Image (cartoon, rainbow, N blue to C red):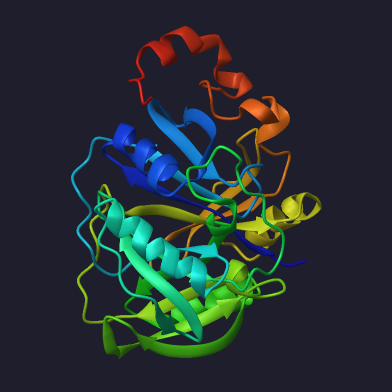
Length: 315
């Protein structure tokens, strides 16, 4: 039983209409699910992904009117988006700069080419060359040419003040494998430890920066809420049993309808989720029209009129 890669990453936006415009327009991802936070139905929960909403491609946002994040440790600090090839990265630097986004140059980091940039609220992102490995499902209506589109999520970078307790959970609970280290690009005195799961590669890596001299982050807009790791559907119950058997405090099984979840915090306070691959976003919508209307899980349907009336327009 092992986790196979990054499932999704959920972040926070205080300007959800601008967020929608940026990720579907500038970044060219498809809005595959337009829903609400199931624990706070006043807030949108938007899911951006590839054309099919494949597990491992979802970048999602909660719509919360909060202050900007104060950056620091005890947090997820950067999300990588996979693209194919150096030519594509150079295309992206021109594309982003032409739209007023401050994008870095193409640089090599941890043996791969990357381009760093931020969204309008300060969400830290990087495009990373995955060499075109694995499947890709470009969205036909994206403003980004198919060969340059985001192919899915890449490594997730998090910051902790002390490695040992996090390392114990990653290896002993989640069966991650430590594979290498590199110097943090913002401060060479800080070391980033790379862990992989499943078959490894950029779609299945967690990067842990040890930064004991940073103050703790304060959550807010432009920050990350949690990262989710993929499990095959048939292993979901076993993961629930495993967390309980070794007494890891957790949410217990949570049915999100499009996937099933387990939530827990690693020792440095960062929220982890284990999420099943299925049943997927097309279980309640036509695949051709994903994300075009507000969709609610069945238990919220009786409150549809009240919930939808309170949501702002994002189109």
